[in-house]
Structure formats: structure tokens, C-alpha cells
Length: 607
Image (cartoon, rainbow, N blue to C red; front, side, top):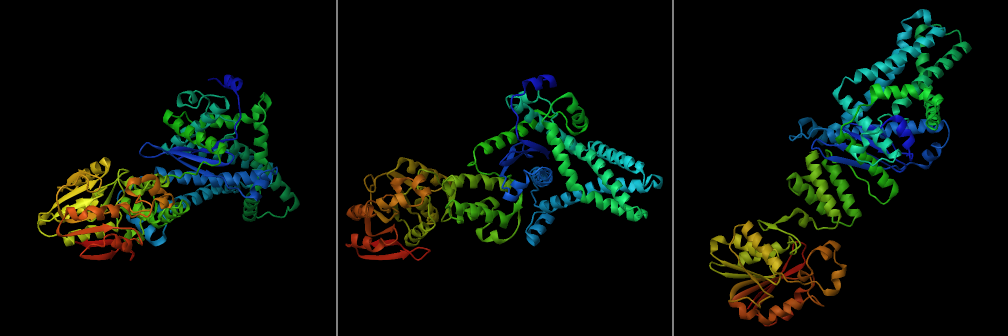
């Protein structure tokens, strides 16, 4: 698309601006900024943050000349942060973690990449001051005849302009800079496409110009020219007022001081000039725009590849989306990080969403393959690990139970597959399984009613393999039976499964009957944890009006299915044990067992 045609087709302006970062683009709108980066795996990651400007900054941003300084400073800060963050995304994922990274994590609780990026930013500022303020002044001191006359200011301008152009040209020799300039071109093309009503697809956007009026290159060139003019006038005026300063060293440091002091004024004036030029598009104004556009065309932008355009479009669309809808949440990159800080942030996020903080510990311990007790040992979390953690955390924030997300859980020495077909095995239920194992004798027949995932039947069968016991498992749900069968195969144990509503399809007598029936009162189900209420099967939760319906049904028939001196072991809800003992009044022996928290949780009855 030609430039003249683009002007004719211009349909709408946009307040969105941006900059290129490492393997990506940052776009900034009215209320947010979004940085899109293609990571080493080829995926586009987007970090989007709201712009929480203070009232003072907002007011200052409206004052002519002052707003230039404020906007320049805020742009430098946000741009540097975006560049540093993109470096973390694009950094290599060191599988060994690195001794240096580990040492920094343990000693200072910071990532070595954080240290390097801050150091790099400081070096960048120092280099800018050295190249564009110190060096030109130093070169002037090498030519004594020009000092104190008009040629000092002429040569100063020539040196600054030459250093600026030389700097842009030299860094272009670096491969990473060339790719940065290609992303710069992708940023411009995307904004131009939007302003001209072009569909934001790589195929359509690549036809647009990579030159834009509001480019930072043009701004830098204007800053340079205004810097030369203002510094020359102020320096000339200063020495007109104080002509006695003839010492070369004194003049050198006075000149340096004046340049640094005048930086805010230069920034403010430059911003107003650029803003004024952007309002007009005619031959006269284009004379002033031409140098900046020429620099863009020859040095600071390159034709991007289509995958680069995809990244720029992703950042631009994210800003549009978030500016239009303030309810859209922020997003962050998946990068390396310090374990303690990441875990603390996840726990805080879970607490804000009424999710048990212990789930955060489980997520980190599972992904990092360490015990929960070892989470206190500081370390660096690699990007690949961060990505897995993020994926699980995001799913958990939807309300889906953690173990359904993980897909399996540990139960009494067995790996148990879990999903929405059955309740998630609770740690305290291991006490029930353990009681069955310790009570069983050689050749016993064991029945597990309301088996659900089969965790009790499978773990008991595995633990008692050498005692030649037979294990039968029953459940009213066909789906639960299928899940339990999968768990039996997963743990290589022999269990007979029966689809049965309690004893209805069960045949024979058993030495031990274990059961973890539904025991929550019907009226309490709307008030239990949301994730349990909305995800786990209600048929496995609802125990009737008082929560004891299943115990009454079991009491009615259990003797017909127990061998002589047979034992019934059941789990129950808090405060139900004594009521259950009353239901099973015709018994020979009964005891109540407590769970890990000291709650009366299990009833063991011998007939």
C-alpha cells in the first residue's frame, strides 16, 4: 500500500503507542499496557498490567511542558520494565538451575536475572550520559581555538548528531538489535493498520507502512535538535553573564552540569513540538518530520516477518480489550522466579478467591517434585516449572478441585486416579483403610461399600496381597465403578466390582465390611465448600435430612452379610458417632476412632 493511498484511507486515530522489546512488542493505551513476547517454545506470552497513575501524575500530565517531562519519565520506566520482563521470558530455561542462580536465590531471595536486568538498565543510563553529554563536551576540549566562540556550539551540535547517527548504525550490526528493529516495524505496521481501518491479520498488516509520525526515533531526533539549540543559547548566555570563567576544566564541568540541569526543559519543549507536528499533515510540517522518518526507514525499523506481526497484533488487541473492559484481569509472563515469593503470591491469590492456601503448597510440591516440608528451602523456579504451576493455578481459580486438575492423588501407598465420577479421597479416610488392613486375617473376605474411586478397596487389596484375602467393591454409580476398575488396573490388584445400591446386588458373607457412605445433611449441602458442591457428585454427599439415612439402611441388613464375628467399619461426619452407635444398638462390641484432627470420625462394630 503506497503512502499516498494510506493517507486517503485513514479512518481513525488511536491513542495507543508502543515500543519493541526482545522478541516482542509492548503497547500502551489509556488504562493499561500489554507486552507480547514469543518465548523459546514458539508460544506468544502476554503480560498485561493496569496503569495505576496517581492523581498528581494525572494532573501533571495535563500541564504543557511539564507533561513532557512526566510522560518521558513514565515512558522510560514502563519501557525499561517491559524490556527487562521480555528478557526474562526469552532467557534460556537452564535445566540444572545453575550454581549462581541457586546462590542468589538462597542468599538474597532474588533471581540472578533480576540483578542482571537492573545492572543493565543502570549501565544503559550511564552509557547514554557518557555518549551524548560527556563525549561531545570532551571532544570540544580537544579543540581549544573554538572554545568561547560560535564554532564551539556549531561543533558541539555536529558531534552530538554524528555520535547519535553512529550509535544507531553501529548497534545495527548486532543480530538481536536487527530483530528488535524488525519488531519495531511490526509495532508501526499494526498501529498504522488500525488507524486506516485495515483488518488486523498478519497478511493485511504487512501491507501497511513501517513508518509512523509518533515514533520514538522522531522524538529522539527532535530532542537532539532542541538540545543543541537550548544548550547553545543557555551556555552562550551563561558565559555572557560570567565571562571570567576561562579555566578549561572548570568550563567543562560547568557545561556538563548545565546540560544535565536542562534535561527536563529539553524534554518538555521536545514533547510539545512533537505533539504539535503530529496534529498537522502538510508539506511545510513534513519538512520537520522528514529527518525522523528517514531515520526510521534507514536505521530503526526493518520489515518484520509474519510471526512478528502476530506478536504485535496480540499486544495491540490486548490493550484494546482491556481499555474497553475494566473487569478484565491482569496477566503476567511465565518466567523464572524465587520459590518463596512465588508461593506467597499464589497463596495470597488463593486467599482472595476463598481457596485453601494448602492447595498452593500442593501445587508447588507436585510440580517441583519435592515434599511440602521442603518448600521452605529457597530455590529458583525455572520457566518450565513456572508454566506448569501457572496452568494448574489458573484452572484451580475456576473453582475446579485441585485433584481433579492433577488427575490423581496418593492414598495409603497407592496412586488413585480421580475425576468427577467420584469423591476425591480425603487423607483421613486412610485411617479407615488402615483399620481394615490391621484387622484382616489370612483368607478373609472383605467388602467395600460406596467404593467411589475404589481407593479403600484398591489400597486394602494391595496391602493384603500376601494374606490371600478377597476384596469386593460395590457402588450404586456405574461411572464410579468404571473409575474404581481403572484404579485397580493402575495398581495391579484383583478386586471384584459390583454395581449395587448398598447390599441390593451383593452376594455372600464377609469377615470385614468397610463403608464411607454419604453423611452430609441435605440442608447443609448448599453451604458446603463451593468447589465440592459444584464439582463432586451429590449422590456421594447427600445423607438425607439428618445425614444418617445410609447408616439406618446398613443397620437393617448388615447381619445378613457378615460372617460370624464379622466386623463393620464406617466413616462418619463430625458429631454423628454417638447417634450411629444408637442405630447399631444390637451389637457385641463397638469403638469410635478419631481422625488426625482429633474428631470422632470412625465407628468400628463387631457383631
